[in-house]
Structures are given as C-alpha cells and as structure tokens.
Image (cartoon, rainbow, N blue to C red):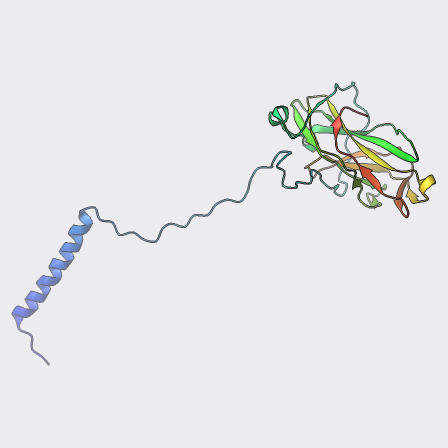
Length: 233
C-alpha cells in the first residue's frame, strides 16, 4: 500500500472542487450544451389538383364498378352554352374542376352517319358555383348486374381545352362506334352507361336506350372525344 500524505490528498480534493466549480460557472455564463438536432418529418398529403396539373396527366378517369344510380335524362331547363379556353386561361384559373357530385350526366340523341353511331355524352353543372372540365370522360357499358360489357373505350385524337361551366351550363363529349350491322361485330344490349368526369373517381350512371353496342370481334372499338362546350355538335 502506497501512503499518500494528507496534504497531497487535500490538494487533489481541492483541485477537483475547482474543476466542478469552473464547469458550473461556465454554465452560468450562458454556455449551453447542445444535444443532437431534433428530428422533423415532412407531410406527404396534398390537396387534389386542378385540371391542368392533375395527378393523372392523361386528362381522364376510368369508370369504376357501379355503386348507385344517379339522376339521368336531359336537364329540365335548357342550359346556356359554356365557354372554352385553350390551355387553361384566365377564365379557367378563376375556378376549379367540377366534381362528380356537382354534375348530372345524360346521353343525347344518336346522330348516325357513314356507318357510324354517334352519341353525345353530356355533363351539366348542377351546383351553385362555376367549375371546369377538361379532357376525356371515362365510360363503360354495363349489364343489369353491373358487369362491364366490352373493353374500355379508346380516345379519338384531339386537343383538350378547359371548358368553364357556370351553374346550369353543359359540356359534351362524343361516343362513337361502327354500326354492328355493318361491321359484323358481336353485340350486347347494355342496361346503362357509366360516365366518369375528368380527374374524378366516382361515376354517374345513365340508363342506356341506344340499342345494341359492339363488344367484341372486328371493328368493335368504341371511341370517346374530348369535352366541348354545349350539349351537342
């Protein structure tokens, strides 16, 4: 055992006390001991976008499985003509896209020609605000049980314009296919047509009264055009 003189032990204790006192003095002078920076996380949710910057830039939405019937038929009052702006101008910027719950769907009278059947698919703004539609609708023929008949319609070429709908105004898109009697395609008689507004997921259900439609075989394709102002060409 090594003997340490009492004076040396006192000196060591004194030196330790001075070190502790120095540390307390430093903290008292405003010096702060920092831990690791706090971890923050950024949110990922964002509000739904408008017509020109929608998550699905294709300007369309697909028809989903049927859930409930929506009011059908032509509007009770003749809608006034809507206005269209190319590329989403000032008129379009002042409003937002129309949601399914704000619209009524109908199918206009067939305008056949050159072996083609041409039906206008019409959306009418039933809300109390101005809203817009742009691009193609989604569409699907279904039977009475809700099963889809035939493939999803294709798209005709054409430039999309933003159609501004004031309350009561309408926009139409063409639904066209070759006459099955001419094309020889296999046909079915749909119970309804499901119509989904652009950039929406919910659909509107319209009773189909247009007769047989092609569902398979040669020249069975059905096509849609982009929306234009009004109720028919």
